[in-house]
Image 1 (cartoon, protein in one colour):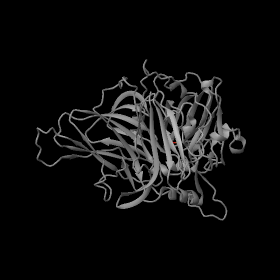
Image 2 (cartoon, helix red, strand yellow):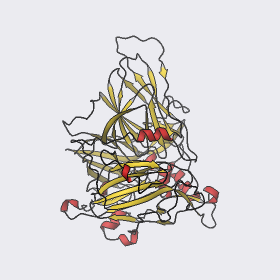
Image 3 (cartoon, rainbow, N blue to C red):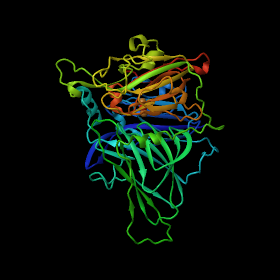
Length: 549
Ligand code: C2O
């Protein structure tokens, strides 16, 4: 591979959306931010220079970061933030991944405007395992907030209530014509009849899973989270925050200047407030110059499943299979060294004395994994581990099983709604541990899907289901042959999902719900994977420019 150098200058920039101009944090003045292009096997070096008042970190979402944990980016997990006027150079090699990932800020809610694609092509002379596209088009879904997003989350955390929802969904930063004053801010994709296009779909939205479809067109899914999958056709895509999906779009042979709506809007299972609006773009056919079309352009409307259509979401999710062939094997751990059962969900904590709280019944919203609401330290976990300062920063006793087990899908409105601690606990894993993890949605405060994202690893999704996980009968149905391999999986609303991974990458690896509000409330934890015995199984020392807290 080659080395690809980038410089990310973090700057403020005035951007106008929905008739309002707002100063936002950007990379190089661009919104959405610039793409990173690389081939599998390349080294990527990105110097991030912070020219703004906010503390910054950048996370390379989905990049395995093999032996390069110092470049992962979550604030207070692998690094202290880059302060105003400072810089930090991220440096990592892309190993065994091809497809689409994305980068985003990983501190507070700054990823609302700080995000961009990571495009990973196969090694030179290695073809795609599908038809070569005529063109490739990144499409990033996002959310636009009129207000400052850090103010929104700070206010939510102080009052204990729910945060303001966004004012628009966007495709490549553009809300589209269904929103006020946004007709000119519409994403347009011009296609030639008969050609095949690779759409690199990324959900960078803060808080919503999205359905996506294109009027009158079928899409072929070929890659998820930078791993090829067995191709399948679908009319609608479901994509959770943190997921990336490559799809082939075959333009019809002849459509003189017809246009088709592309639309995305949320899949929402919870009962809270959310924005049920729709972002749209236009797929426009370029007619050959020999054909004169004088009539008005026909425009075909897209249809999307209803907001709460869990069966559409489930049917789509269950179609994913890894290729699992000679060239692209699925190395599923057949045996397990350590088993974990994590409950994930929302709850409430009592309001502190002399305070008024705006959560349910005057409480404060919280979220937890195994009843533990994770608190980030004021220094970086990986640094604390590496320098032997760990006992002052975290404990190694994250519970393997819920502290308060109960019937997760029964009527639990009274019991178990509050989390028991606000602490920094890690799971410590010896190098090479084969982990099986069941994640169970607790259904408290309304069943809700949680897109759980694991840093530093891909995992295999062996199975999922609704209701309580059954440890006797469900494992018999696990797919150990061709399960999909990804970095973000939706824990189904009122159900469970089973994953496995091999802990072969030393470092501290964050795992959290990629709905940003749930992360803020504490639906997060971290794994400490220890060094192995061999020299190439040890995390190298930190780079000299690693920021200090
Ligand atoms: Cu895309 Cu920890 O995040």
